[in-house]
Length: 392
Image (cartoon, rainbow, N blue to C red; front, top):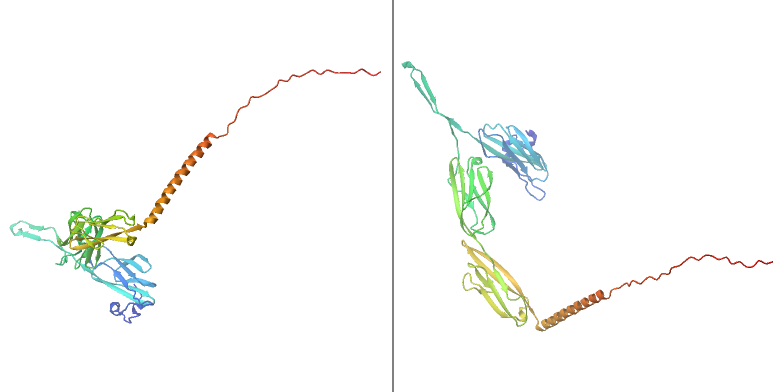
């Protein structure tokens, strides 16, 4: 429980519920208001288990975020600016209050939780034959439970695209207010013979389902939303047209031409589309527009625009494309042609020269000739002592 002094601050009243009517939201430095959000189920069954309550604030510097209730509570998780609590032992309708301090000002939010009860009924019969010397016969039927549901007479609000292009993904939403209890309501979304898997959100007595639709074939398909509760149902349906729009296609016989050349321009966009090429309207749906012109200097940089319009389920879909034409001067074109020819000739000459040089290198390699070895046989000679005559 929050200390009582925190509930007295800005409102100066000892009653927490009166505080809900008299407290105001604090403002930031720029006069911005920082609300406090309290999310809880609007109704729960009498035999239901614990419920989860979420308190969150957009205040940049919150403190002392807590939940005021007489029910047993347990903190489930918390973080900067948020906290969730489990509430249990719900035996009667209850009011819960979230409270937070934002820049030393107290902000509160409240929510009412309604408890609905189911009644069990059974039938008991007695046959007393004791006066006839027999016994008392008793019989009790199986018990049946009486439950209370609220389902409005209005149909769900179904929001779906009137047209859908092949391969395109679009959202579909279905919502219904006034459900009790909304936690037990079921919603079904169907596209043609394809069941969708919606993401369902419940807030109080409101239910909202969102799904993504996708088709890969043309045709008209029915989208159906069905909400069921307590054995009854409410449904809504609408039609969507699946189409394909290929184009527009804009083609030029040549996008770079010389002055005086003939240029053919064609604009088309499929069998059911109306096309316009540079202000020229096609004679009928599905027919192309063709233009022919002799390129002039003034046509250099000219953009040809092809616009196409397709009507699908009463809606007009517009698309366009453009191509630019470049007109070259004839003299400049001749110079370019001559330079191109000279460049080609130079490349051919250089290539031939390289081939010749490469061939010469193959024939003019270095050769090594093996020369015969010249050798002489030497024999050793005995030494002869030459002695002179001795002197007398």
